[in-house]
Image 1 (cartoon, rainbow, N blue to C red):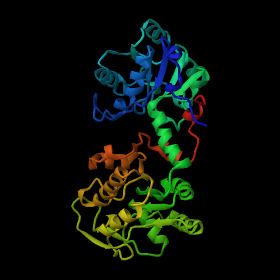
Image 2 (image 1 turned 90 degrees about the horizontal axis):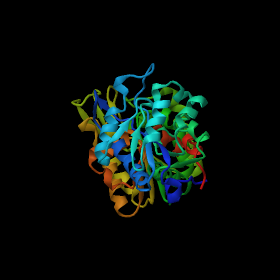
Image 3 (image 1 turned 90 degrees about the vertical axis):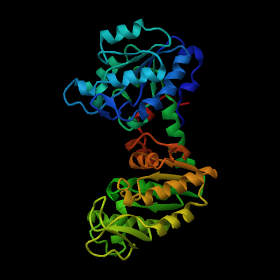
Image 4 (image 1 turned 30 degrees about the vertical axis):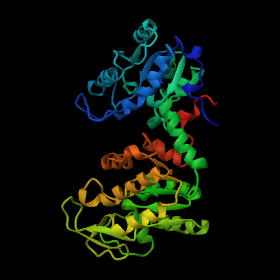
Length: 400
């Protein structure tokens, strides 16, 4: 069932109302300096929309993993300051996220004001989804907007608990867009549909692989997990990363694909190295001819050419995980090559979805991020949605 978003609310439902917006402001910091403000920038459209409707906006979020109560290094102060610059207005940082002082700041605010509550994880009750804490968090507000896709797979007080006390609970623009693309692609993406699943471990991707095998026509496997599959096929993999406990699982995936008549594509050639190092000696070999003492760290050029052919007719493509150790320049060609292919097919009308983590970093580094249909802001949340799981932070919102 599609979820209600802020766009489904009438103007008089928002004007003068005290709105609590759960954003994902969990940004990387160097001391008090924000090193990547993408998450703050992404939250601005929802806040601007609510302001334009005359709402009184209060933002809440977690930052980092505070151990025992408030820690200055995890204060949302830098986020409030940065958001203020982007909105060109003062964003008042409350000294806490619950209590009388917060209630007074919110109560005294005017239409169009923006307040930021202090880090919700300064309370252990947040991650435990403690009902009493959820009630206190919700107390000063009339409406809840969840715009934090990155934490929607967690049933925390600020993502799920507050909805029990605020009858109007809807999604913001960012969350709505994630659901439209990720859930939309999984449920009814146009075919031919392909999934590119990369990264180092089969163990962390096996559920998503299994789910995508049911939905997709073609699966491209890349990254370190390739070698567990090659071993499952009986090939020598040298000193490449292998999860021995998952060789049988990899074999099962290949057998399931055959039963379903689906294509699983492993790279035909591999860039190998004599050490895991940016300046290692390298050579390119066929994937079934990796010599002892060498490890695979990227796809070879033939594999990339094959990927171009495989993806050329696809209407929907989901990418989750890189093709190699793209952080090292010698081993970034497989990943950047497939990102370039995705950018080109997007220009021709395909829907391309980059799901989480390292794939997003690879798109950003390649300079091609803006050419993708959608770049997901959630790591674990993207994976769980692609696996077909119900996200607690989404399930708790009102249906359309």
